[in-house]
Length: 359
Image 1 (spheres, rainbow, N blue to C red):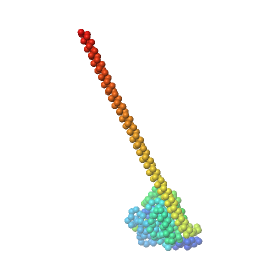
Image 2 (image 1 turned 30 degrees about the vertical axis):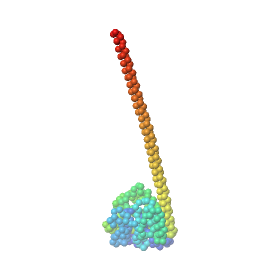
Image 3 (image 1 turned 180 degrees about the vertical axis):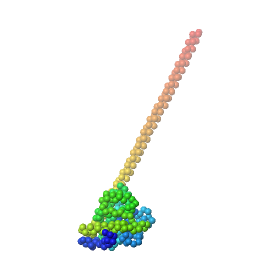
Image 4 (image 1 turned 90 degrees about the vertical axis):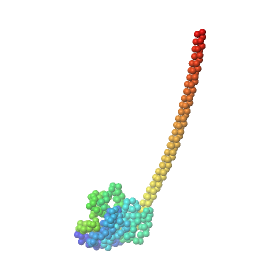
């Protein structure tokens, strides 16, 4: 199909033309999600630029075109209307894959939070409160197509793969549609490796793009056709599901709400258990430290007593040795005295005998 026919098919899309009617759906929400700085806003700029076929602008306020270096400019759910029945939504991106931010992502993907409003990461049951307050604002007639945007510049580390796969599969369970993956910056990384990684996660529909930017917006037929083909794929997916499944938008909205509320409940229960485990571990560590301290004190006391006993034994040995030396000295003194007395006595006798003999 040439580009004019693609444009005509996209522009004329309406759920009213589906077999069996629209089943309560009025438009497609292409819900973009993913980690910060992977090019969601730039991809929206690319889609709008191709669709409008006019002057390039930074409609989505892409951070890389505002002088940013780390990405992550979007903090709202910002809608960008392509046609009367197709809307691109620039959702707030994930900074990390922790349970709090992914919970917020699921609330955005489920269309449970209003468009055009600031998205605040909240802990506890704050997300549930915001969902309840938004019930009368959000539209149940929006058909959700989840689209993960991932930059080929960012390598998927082995330890990140499981979390990313869980995010994609949970998005599928929430919306009833397996996410499409958009790979950006395709000439700045190992495209084949990244595509292979997502295929291993079960992703079937993967599109790779080099986004138009303020510095590089020279129109090419290839880029235009890729964007229009992506939009056509989104429409085909939505039409297939509406035509081949019995749908109830009101019921599906309630199911998504229950899904996220249950997710938050399970998350908080898990967090509470982890908190209790950490508290228990801390108490055990403190107790262990106290026991170790007591054991060290007991050991010091045992050493002190052993030292005192050794000192006492040493003093006793020294006292015995001194007494022995004193006794020995006395004995030797007495022995010398006896020897001297005997010597004197012998001398005296010798003198007497000599005198008698002389006489």
